[in-house]
Image 1 (cartoon, rainbow, N blue to C red):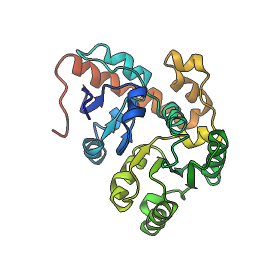
Image 2 (image 1 turned 30 degrees about the vertical axis):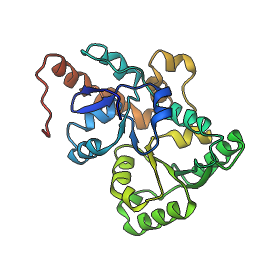
Image 3 (image 1 turned 90 degrees about the vertical axis):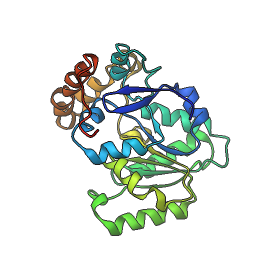
Image 4 (image 1 turned 60 degrees about the horizontal axis):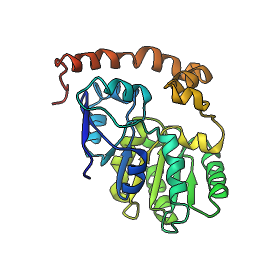
Length: 251
């Protein structure tokens, strides 16, 4: 990769655009940091270590993008994972060699997303879909079964959407067991959005960087603490970076 990188706290974020990413993403693991990731990355060493191994680290957050403008070099644009995935399969709609597998969401949701995407694209670009059980990452037998399902599907692109950091950790633990897969994407609620079980914020909310607030209003039990308590720590850490007193806890 030739793109430059922007240091945000203890990770390097690629300075790239969605257009460049669509053209360049041929192999590797894509992860999309937001404020929640950056807070977790101050405590979770396993999460931090896998970030060092990921080939594609791109900004998911409009807020992170805006705050990066205070740095010497800023992120070029936010690339929300859910928007990027839609752009990705439309970009590859006529590429018969692009075969996608969806792993995640509640029972039946991944299958519904598969159906809707294939209908939209006009071919079987999504060749497989599976919704794992709750806590599957701690069940070795189920993980072995999932690896077999992915390998047998013939997919060369796998989207895992089971929430961070679970999805990133699962990919990094097992990606070498799926040699036919060129691209892994860790993209949270994307499968739910594609299935229509979760609605994305209206474009206006997205453009002003308030999609997080819209989602919080829709899912307060799940997201209220995350956005208004946990993620607030980001601003403390980031202010330390601006003052040149931030220290990577794992360096």
